[in-house]
Length: 336
Image (cartoon, rainbow, N blue to C red; front, side):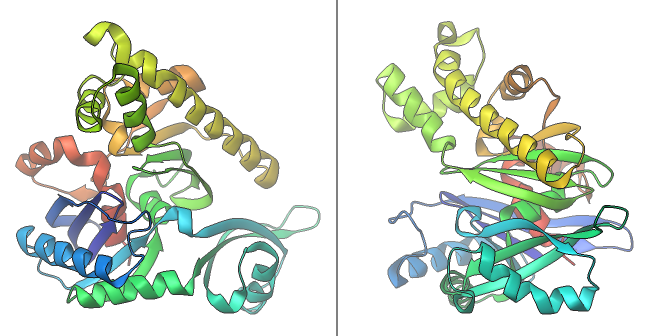
């Protein structure tokens, strides 16, 4: 299967081969592009540009498969954990559309709705089923269908970014929190046993970090981006100026993470996450994990999306600087 992650600044593609009990990396690639609109699928002209980029990436990465699972932006998807009486699977399937009307901010007939049963608490009073409701505007899904068709590929499914990440980087026997640093949003998720339990997005992300460095040092955005990636939160470089600029923004992100954990514990009555896993482009900044550990008082790790994938040691070295970028595309390709 091929996973296609269409971000706001980069597109990532991964092809995996499923063996009996493992996945093997066949090919991968990443390419940058500049979107002309805030919502990069806003018009047909943008679709045409993007489809050309996708075809180029598919060819240059030497991807063989043409059946793809694509990600849709977390910021444009509505995800909510809801509690239902102890219904059977078929009863939940029948009830979910009517339940969705209470929770999604647009008409049900204009939505593509999916759900996952994530927990059954039979011993609770009263017994309850916890269901993850996922809803996306039909117009958004249709734009992705059209984009993939224009790219001469076959769309098998679309999936949210955090659902894919939950599959690729999260352990199967723990509850963890994921913070995915994108360009325009940071997506936060609680994941239990590799299953997405809750999610939220905040607008503070990679672009905000870059703007802060540019304004703080009086330099152009491109140079600020390089400074951010190269120096990150180290004390030794530039007298620690980059760290002093970035630290307040990461503190804001850590505050949102704390709120997410508190909400999850109060709503689901579940244990606190054992660790926090960072992914996305800005997760590659030097010392970001140690600073987030200091801010949150819990172990913070950088996610490796190829942990569950067999991969040649030479390719591991080639991909070392790009690992945080591949969490979504690997998870999409792992979808069975």
